[in-house]
Structure formats: C-alpha cells, structure tokens
Image (cartoon, rainbow, N blue to C red; front, side, top):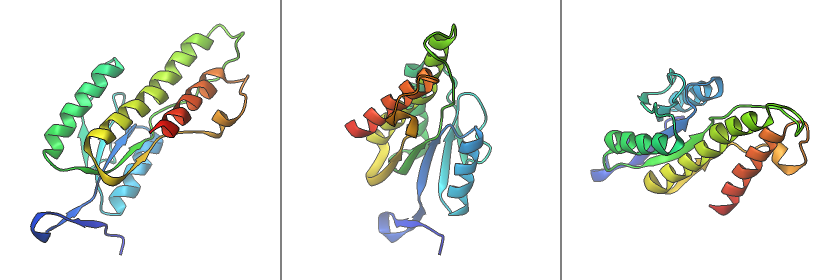
Length: 169
C-alpha cells in the first residue's frame, strides 16, 4: 500500500507530514504532488509563489532570511501544535552563472546564497525544532560542489556551502 501511516496517541493512525521549502516552484510543486499521492500531509512554503500542490500553504513573505525563518517557525507552531514533522525537504533554489570577470558575479552570488544556502539553513533549523527522531531532512546539493566551476562561481560556491552544511549536521 502507498498509504504511509504512523501510530499516534491511543493507537490512532495519522498521516505523515512533510514540510516542502520552495513548494511554489516547478520542482516544489512536483515534490508536493508525489508526497500527496502517497497520502502525506504536505505543508508548503515559498515566499515567491503559492504552493499550489501542497495540502496547506504556510505564509512566509518576509524579505530577510532571518524574518523568513521567524515567520516559518511561527507558522509551524500554529499548524503543528505539539505534533512533529516526518520530513523536511528543501527544493528552493535557482541557477546563476558567472565567471569572476563578469560584472554581475557578485549579484548572482548573492542570489544563489539567498535561494540555496539560506533556505537550507532555515530547513535545518526547522528540522532541528520539529522533525521527529529518525525523520528525513533533504537539502539541495549538486555535483557542481565537487569540482571547480569557473564558468559558474555563484552556483558552485552556493552548492559547496550546502554540502558543508550537510556534512556538519
């Protein structure tokens, strides 16, 4: 059966819960669809687009990563009460190219850090607070973190940071 259940208080069955960061993007919508098809309750968050595929959309519309994290933690407390998540999946991110000589390399690097590194740190923080023991945390690494990417310093640098975060958790 594709129905994934855990035993709650008094032996009642409850659906598993997943938080999907980046749920409003193409990949995020598909991830939500896959979890929902397997009877998971999906909590979607995306400050830039509505998480159409999520069971519930958590509103996080702050501009700074610090405020996004505070809003997300507040929303999780409201939606979960004393319950826990079974998984936290971060599919937020993007792609930006640029060599050191490109005029936009600093702006592109900032965009990649905000969309990939900060969201991964926020996902890790949320997981530390509300993920059940033995739960799953997924962060968006890439093969670009494993070798030089002179053609794409912003992307490579951000993925190296995410890989470091994963190794450090």
